[in-house]
Figure 1 (cartoon, one colour):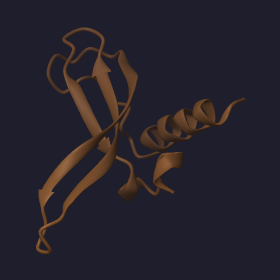
Figure 2 (figure 1 turned 90 degrees about the vertical axis):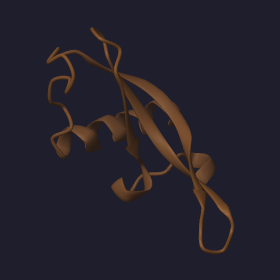
Figure 3 (figure 1 turned 180 degrees about the horizontal axis):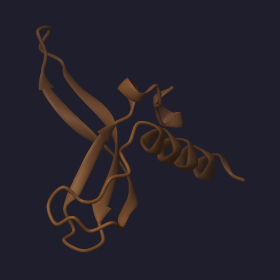
Figure 4 (figure 1 turned 120 degrees about the horizontal axis):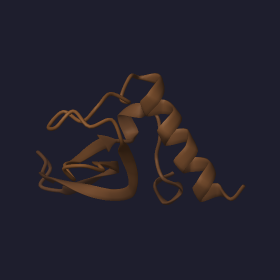
Length: 82
């Protein structure tokens, strides 16, 4: 198994472990799809620096609502962040 697939599996397992496997909060549909990763800009900090938070993205397969899950607080970070 390559490292990207292994990391995806770790993220999905962690979300499931924490109960983030519930139906969609908008429409109640039960199929939520893991979409991928992005970085969420956090804006200015007290030291006038911009920060990006790596996030995992999931989407409802019915209404297409997107949810972001911050990876660092979950104890996970993409390989390029380590």
